[in-house]
Amino acid sequence: MAFKINFSHAGALALLVALGGAAHAVQALPGGRTLAFALATGGVLGLVLQRTRFCFYCHARDWFEDGNPRGLLAIVLALAVGVVGYTVVLGSWLPVPQPGKLPPDMHIGPVSWVLVAAGLSFGAGMVVSGSCISAHWYRLAEGSPVSPFALIGSALGFILGFITWNPLYSLSVADAPVVWLPAHLGYGGALLVQLGGLALVAAWLWRGFAREAAAESAARGAVPSLGAVWRGLWAGRWPYWVGGLAVGLIGAFAIVRMRPLGVTATLGSAARQWAQGQGWIPERLEGLDGFAGCATAPQSTWFTPNALLLAGLVAGAFVAALASRQFAPRWPTWRDAMRGLAGGVLLGWGAMTGLGCTIGTLLSGGMAGALSGWVFGVAVFVAVWAGLRLKRRWPAGR
View 1: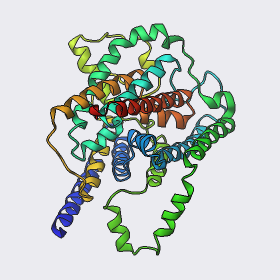
View 2: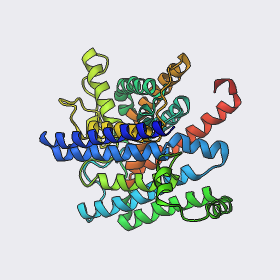
View 3: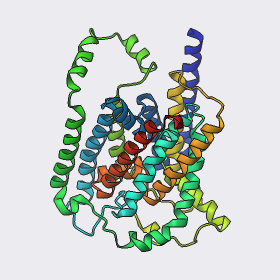
View 4: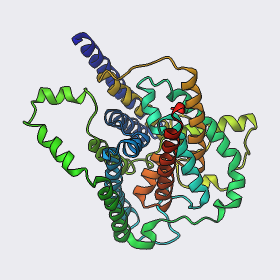
């Protein structure tokens, strides 16, 4: 057992050194400092996501099936921290928010029934595949047999989204309002409304749970030694609140040096470039490239901040999984493959049509004060709730 622990830690350390070397090497490329920052940010994000099991679907399922609110409270905490951070940063960039004038690059999208449909599709894909897209990226580093197929399915879903985009754009998206809350309420008003709403959600989730949490806190006893703390870092999972706090801080910190967090732009760009090469999708996608969000424009190089962020995320998650001995690859079954592909198509269509996923549209959009982020998030969780109810009704489908 000691040999396995030492071997795992040594392998994780070697990978961490390699990640640092890669970050140093990309600084020689054009825009190298931003690329290195994206790679390092992705590494930290992947480490946090893996160690805290930060997964929108898992957290929602814990609440809907077991009444455990810790995960959803972590999401609420991430949003609250991010909202405050974004307000500070955007307030320095655009001191006087005005209607019709949006902060550049922020994930603020149109609000229509198409966005609701995208959120419902994404939530259904989470139920079918067992994770959101961000969790599939870090579970890829844990050896998940479903995640590779879910990511392939997501690329196919993006292609389906590109095929349906022009009709949906003409039908509804073109005339849909793009609502940035600070432009209508001011930074103070938007901050008050968003934090107030999150506080109400947190109070609702916390009801009847405070006594149990207090009892658990009292049962922990004396302060642990440094050795016990170190061992605890690589055993089990970190507390939910650590994930929420860290994700919120990373999200707010990231916009200082690069675009808001998102984990679908590179996947969508690759799918778009390949599908256009095959003649499967229109060369012109009406209005798409004018919207802020997880951009899916064909790339002339794959050394982009988003690509490096994803590479760092997977590498950081692999470091964490290896060090904690949670890297457990398994040969996929046909059920794994079909579940991943089917759920991935729903995820990809929802992410493309909603201009991002639970990270890009919900987290980054909500933190920026975009009404689109909150609408997308509500639709996602409604779909998860309905999907879990259907699964209970037909247990053979589990």
